[in-house]
Image (cartoon, rainbow, N blue to C red; front, side, top):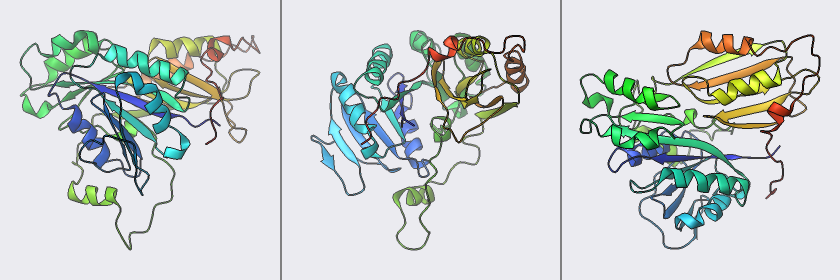
Length: 337
């Protein structure tokens, strides 16, 4: 099946902690190979480690890292390079400068995914807000927050009671709002950890192991996000299920799973916000109904289960139209390089 690498956009005002968040992702990558496009002009390919400085030309390192520079207009070509199978990356993070326009970056990314960067997938817009900023500073980002698939409220330890700010953000954000400390966003919320064979502990330690030992994970760093699994043994109705996904379930940032519809083979379904991707499941995968996992913050497990139950297919309609779901089917035309 086509290999797609999620590209996540990280935006926010100057000084809110975007770089801190990206550095945390790198330190906690735990085997996830991350590529980072920094401040709209510098690109750094990273194998779960920090790379200091900015390169002025394309450089190939022994560990497979790529370093180059580009402007926003070159984003499509850069993403095509970073998400190609030969780059062996699992996730690409675009850290926008505090002056960048997130709406334009989202448009550039979607254009790139539909065109030159055929191995890339939209991984969501993450907007960082500083809980300790001046009162009303978050309100200056209202327009950006309304675009966000995930809002990260950083530095909640700097305020006595973050609840009012959380409530105000959740009133305008279409996706979940996740309170964190020091940019501690779990990479597993953005991408599934790869099933790679781990090297033995004996011998030379890898950079990611050294980073984890130098910067041990905070005990409660990732306690704010959660996952809910829903399993059903009966097929779902395509129209009802598509409507459910399009609505953007409350608190859900990302979902993934396998679903069967009446009269059809199973489909793999993945979402980020209201961005939906559907493709036929591998022949080895067989489910009678649905196997779904929802990831986000403040999830209503019972509500999600009830919503999936409401998507159950009507036995009186043995083969309903698949068009509501197939409109989101992704192309399998990708380079096998």
